[in-house]
Image 1 (cartoon, rainbow, N blue to C red):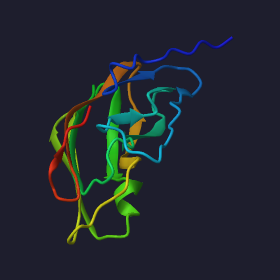
Image 2: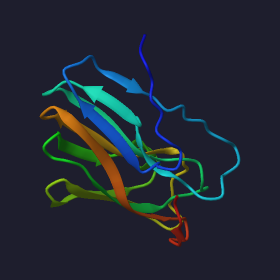
Image 3: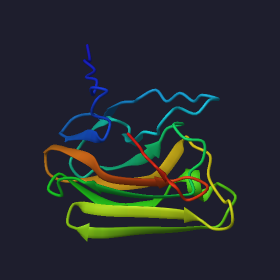
Length: 167
């Protein structure tokens, strides 16, 4: 019988990644949407936990929930152990790429294992409507071990370009 371990709700910005000689499995979080925006948004890595074999390529994403009614731009920084995984691509997520406005997306390697991504909609009152994917991460498992993908910085802006305070 397979045992599922849940990540505590008070640690939404850290996502464990286990690389082992085992079958691919993931504990998928159930995403729900609401017609009413929550008080503040949460930015998180999805899936919350995944196990892969050394050398295996896999995808994860950085997402925002429905805690705000609009997002016009964002900046996020995240870290991980480069001995366990390698980030091969961080591309614009579907929330911005499919919003119907022009966008400018940028991915930067700050240092080994530390990356930043930002995206902005172009035009007066251009915006996206959360929830959705901010960044699509393509990764490759390295050596056997465990690492966290930890979101260290988040800056979300609403339609007026005012800061939104995420959790």
